Length: 315
Image 1 (spheres, rainbow, N blue to C red):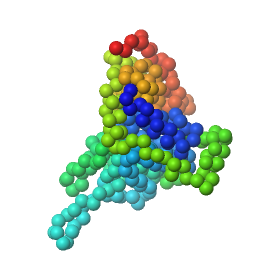
Image 2 (image 1 turned 135 degrees about the vertical axis):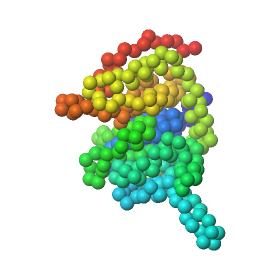
Image 3 (image 1 turned 135 degrees about the horizontal axis):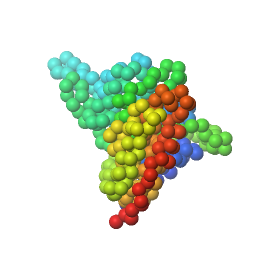
Image 4 (image 1 turned 90 degrees about the horizontal axis):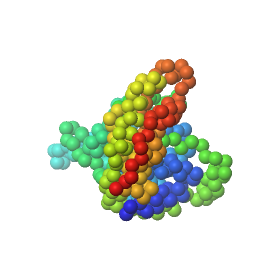
């Protein structure tokens, strides 16, 4: 693939900042190639914000960051109209989403009204203020971090908001040797300063266009539908995957193939991204909660129980 080397170069640059989390970095890169948004669910201090900043710098795109707190207003996100006495007109003042990469820190610490301000821009890539709709710059991506439910000052995000995120990933604690490397790398040094710009906005869009053209055989589509249908019928799941989730699974599978230098999707690509795409979309039943069944356990059961179609040769 023509642009695969650039995508891998971006991964190398981000890897300078986030040590020992190559798979998590790879998942974020896939979502960006698939024109999706990323939700990072984890405890504070494991590098969620640093990773987003490193991606923005390596891709040469404009980024804005908002630290979500209970007093953040929707107008802080989408902007507002300000009356100018000298002109006698209202002028639009841009909000934080007018950028290429919007980083929302601890998104589940703000009010539902402010969270919902992101719904239109994440789905339509437009912002409507006082009846006037404006497009956001392209490419546009949201990387939001959230603290685990139960942390002080957090509240659950609505399902409609969660469904807008293409994937949900978890960084987790580093291994002991990795944490030693982190401490040594930050001794009188900021790794973000050493991240070089690999591509620009135009080049990134070209990579996304190439990812979109990756071939998907009908049997792969059928396998994806079978997996999604299993989430809707599983006894431990109350709410399964929506059609938006099915589309996200196709797009992420294409991105997985692209990163591996293929112009076609194989069954392993679908299995690789399945958990990241469906984890935050599944709502477990009361039966699952009573039996201490986790989302990961249900996902594993679905992957093992759904029969894979006979592999096909790519043309």
